[in-house]
Image 1 (cartoon, helix red, strand yellow):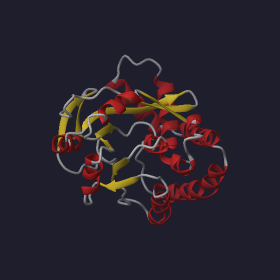
Image 2 (image 1 turned 180 degrees about the vertical axis):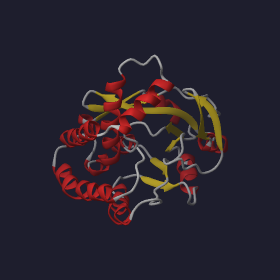
Image 3 (image 1 turned 60 degrees about the vertical axis):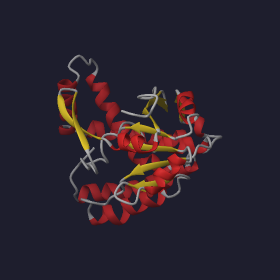
Image 4 (image 1 turned 120 degrees about the vertical axis):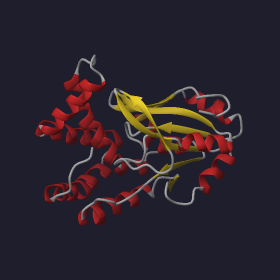
Length: 266
């Protein structure tokens, strides 16, 4: 959710990255998620313009969707979980991961890896984008993620507090996150070693796109999608599998869908 930078936002950042961070890192993971959802509810009840915009976009894209109010409230909850789950990710491991996350379709990934040329999990900015990365690490997979950490457009507090601490916490995840604007050889080497690479198909957030894009019709609009996964697959022979992380009661579930093709082409 993109909002303007200002004093109020900076004050909220200081609250989130200090007392809220300290609280949620001390709580069990499932309780930490509840705190994030409560924060989303508070924002939902306090917001007017953003709720109206979301409802309008929902009606335009999915005119037959019934429960718009519930969807919008879920959006606010999901936004806070996605942004702040980084606080609890480093302490998630094989023993406690099941309390907050599960997989569906994991055998599809295993079947793709049997071909020996690696696998690309193609996902979107939909749901907590880092949790499948940590979950795969906890299961012992060789996995990396393509990302684009940036402090572009942030205020002084945003750069010196939120961005700095986020990078520190991402560094605690036991998997390498390679910046999209850096040298990408580590990703190719991981695929060559029959590893896994996670990458998004809808850019890097805030309409940032690196490399080639393909503009497609999506929910009644022309939307750009990155073609990086296609390029990686063609160069390495890796299999591309779409992946989505969705809510599953009080936890989350990552659904791995069938490969786009047996030879990794898109």
